[in-house]
Image 1 (cartoon, helix red, strand yellow):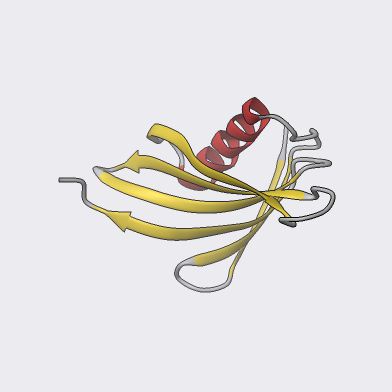
Image 2: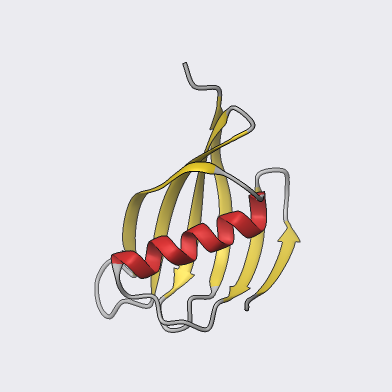
Length: 103
């Protein structure tokens, strides 16, 4: 069970508060929580993959993850950036980076 609150900021950006209440510290945790929030935002998607992952902040104790994911929906390839808090899995930001038609 999870809670999802979406606040539209503009056409490309929304602030997302997704409360997973699960610590996110491994590669598997990041993939699981990323898939869950993308499914909540976009519905059924295919070819989901985590593209890049960076810790936040870059130096010092890690507080969150900056996760870039790619997936397909309706014959379009999406690239979305997520910020996932490590201590509880809360997604505090989601941003659409790119949408394109694959060759």
